Length: 225
Image (cartoon, rainbow, N blue to C red; front, side, top):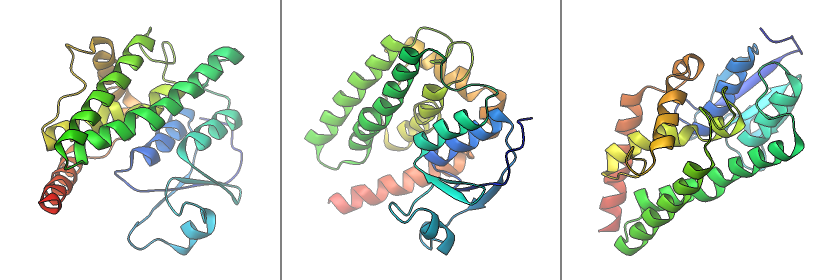
């Protein structure tokens, strides 16, 4: 159990990959916290108070002081609770971990979104191409069991969407991006990550997520006609 540094509140939404990042980090560190489930269609006054800029989850409140944005929160957690470090000790390795975490958010996720949800066939194909290119960069970067070495680190947690949400999305919309043939190291990593005891206990129910993606896909197809 992590050393007690006061009151911790965590505002999230069950199916959000960004909120689950924070939850997994807190659990890995053994941090005690109070969880507040938000309804994004009827956002609480507390959420709007604590994150007035983006008005979204996740938000971490530590001793009354709020932080927003999942990658920012992960680094704060790592600097505050020193057990199970998420970032490497060496400055260059730490910088690389930050780079690849941002790469996932800035390059991988937008490309996958374009491939999955764009109605225009040409744009969809472009999204698939961009997704495969981004995944290849990660495949080349992965040199150990996890991006963090033999234990889960910042990049692994940032990449949780690729390990759990992406395969569900692929099933829902009829895509195949992260295959064991094209990306053997990434595919194996995704299995290792999602089967880690702490991660496995803190992922949303797969069936509910699949239903959500199928409904969203059907709506996007109907809207494009």
